Length: 117
Image 1 (cartoon, rainbow, N blue to C red):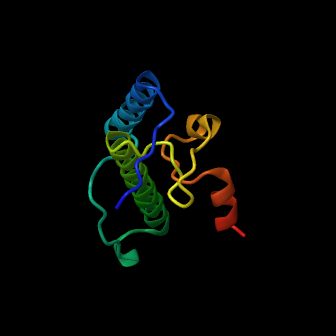
Image 2: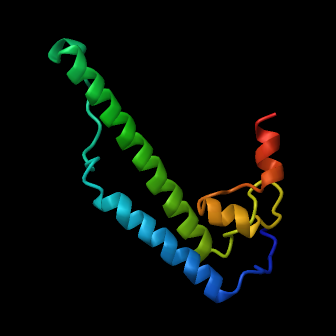
């Protein structure tokens, strides 16, 4: 059974975060530098070395963009479920400064630091 928490953020703050997340998502989805095509297998023999490296960079950018979109969707889901702004590890509130830096963050600074020790 999930523990009921009182989210200290007011409705206006949550709506502002939701709008920022939706704007970020729209920017990612309309970014023409990296298209939304699926990743394909690349065979080095099919391309010259420069083209091969450019294709690798493009695929890395697509993977990064997909990860960002998943993180944004997760943050939007947490807002809907009233879990936004709480650390997944310790269930303590995540600082507003940390959320303003990265709206998709899922751990407070203390727990994030512990993960890198």
